[in-house]
Length: 503
Image (cartoon, rainbow, N blue to C red):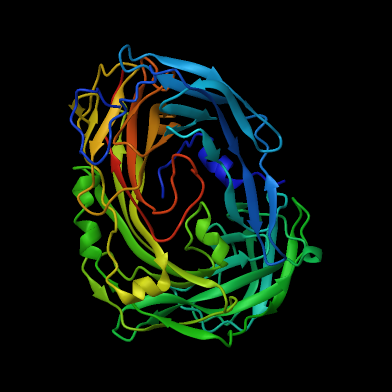
């Protein structure tokens, strides 16, 4: 079975260029309890269990398989609020996707799965996921695809090519790493070459399994109100079978899908921008965009963003943060008419971190909203959840750089000013230096429904420097602390970036 993106992307640390606890005496919002269930009431001893079923959603039919947890480190920790000490209860994972930790006292636990912690009073966990595409083998070696095709509409400088294969769930933009990109005015491709291994979810294509490779011309257009956007325009469809590491050639003709549609939004970009200093007082704005696409309805529960390639509409007309009412944006639609249309609005922000004189590391986060496309068309598009307020490391404000926080530090925060959070996720990053550049590696993530987490043993190391990203989530009907990889609509997410801190 292919390596699930959930476990590739979330259990492993993350290094490179950024994208896209509480002391009991401290006050909390009264609507959210503190972690004062100290686990000292140990009359009830229970087993912690979990299942990990991965459902692959494909054009050729859905398939559910267990994710092999036999190599996953499984430990349940309890914390005594009187002494602050954690107690570890070792568990096991199995090839059938189950996990088990026997004889765990009642109360709140920190369930460690690989490098991730689920902070919950629950004893039963759903570690399953939904993923787009059939089960298959990921391409890891360079596997070039060369395309020669006719039928493009005259190429414009701001057009781009969107690659997708619906059955295996492989997607990607054909960008500057490709060669033979069309010149302005071109109506054909002659020897366009890109590396399939660079695509997202690059399952090896096999025509005998029903795999088709699609290359879409995303064309620059102008909406009814004069707003520029890009829309699905023409599509090349080809039957392809690949051998990993070997080049393959594709030829054909771009044609225009018969099905069409329109999409219009009242985009309150200023509402996203107004939250910039809540992300961090030093945060810089980087982008704002809206995507609209279609998905099998089952993928509303998928881990990854529900809106992305294959795009029907992509809207990022300028670098301004002013509000826009687009009017109708027309697109051609090659995707099944029965699929659910979904949309994503996001605003990006960055903050820089530097160790000594090393070149700074730039961390990117966003504020985002995922909804059915009809909801975007029916009401103004604006954040449905804002960043948390007043983040702290122990009892000190976390936007400043801090030293001496100890290896058993806690992080706490107040509720967002906008929306009601259903869960929070805290990502801890360790800073380092490589070749004169500051680097960041994610060392752990903690999911909780509280407004605080304590950092378990081993997360912080003496002599190291860290920062945290605190995410607030609005996702009714899906508890990230017990079902970390399931999603629901509507959903929103907002991030806060702390300053640097060290033990």
